[in-house]
Image 1 (spheres, rainbow, N blue to C red):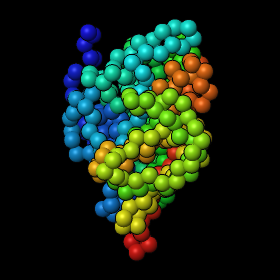
Image 2: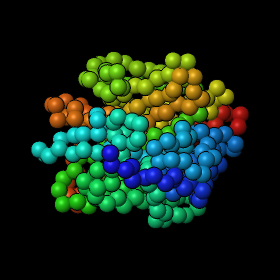
Image 3: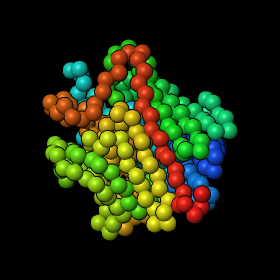
Image 4: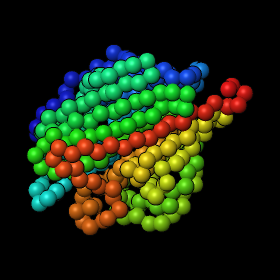
Length: 301
């Protein structure tokens, strides 16, 4: 078996911070380009990440990390694109390739101001078997409204590549209200087998947990806390899919805006037209944005 290339732990000791209005955000570029804290007046919107090292394949359930150059899983780490078969290397102990290689590598700070930061990953061809070189940029801005993020991807290869992007935050909220109109059915591995029309209005922390793929969600969702804090998630149409995940009995709620459903490349190859799979031509650029609107209870404003 081929050695896993990221044997050394990620180093997230270095932290950089931005602020806007009453809000503060902190990042660990060396820890997979991860947002490690987002807070307002002592209220943590996401689970704070305090660890400074972890094995690349055993990431902590805290903060928020980027998904690039695809989101979620690829079955058995294998897909076919434009007639060519591609085999990706999976995290040890996991049968499917997952989340792309972005969260397993150190990112670089390109620009850093008091209220903004750009984190950049230049990934050469071949990392975890991904055959195309690319650049991915996370551009964060923090102001009185909340935290905005623009994710962009540039194909530095000579041929078109399939791709997807997403955000994987571990919110401290107890529930999320939304208006999704399509749910993806899954198999025993949690991979999609198709989709059907079904309205989903609310999901929450529970003893049973939750792992659900949604689409046609209008790019709007509101997260709620017991003390009255609210976070309004606004995503542009590029984030056409949404994953909501919480482990049984967990104290986090992942609400993940993504451009593609899990295993999108293989499902698209089988003729499914709803996967969100996209293709990026050589030298082309794609971007998608979202806003985490932060609102305190009226008594604290």
